[in-house]
Amino acid sequence: MKKYNFITIILLSIIMIFLGSCSSDDEQIGATADDYPRIMGSWPERATDGSLGTLTFNAKDTLTVSVQFSPALYCEGTWYVDGVETAKGNTFKFTEDKADRHNLKLVVKTAKNETTREAIIIVNQ
Image 1 (cartoon, rainbow, N blue to C red):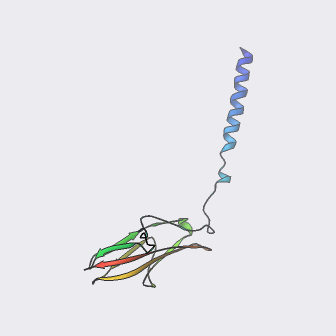
Image 2: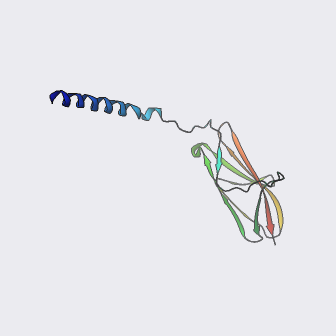
Image 3: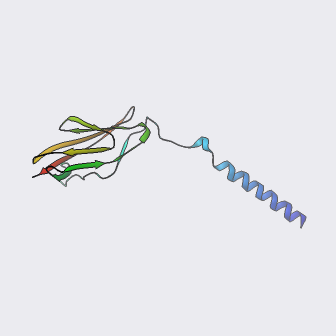
């Protein structure tokens, strides 16, 4: 019986040592400023002919688009309407008084890389 207890204690010790060595905080993989930025959230799909997707809303209403960026600590998002910078950050709001059509572009940058998304804004009367 003493041999059985001794072997059980030895095996449990080996298992504990093995399990303890498997999780090390020093080896955590994290996002860096060198990563390619990713844009997550709802964005209009391209049409079957390859043309840009559309965002549609009524004149005098407000179009709001919210997305997330990753790696969040290292990304900056800039929104452009018809080539003119109109906002920075994760959320874009746009209001128009008359029916019109605009090009929307989102550029998300890290220190070394960038990712873009584009869409057409259609304002109905």
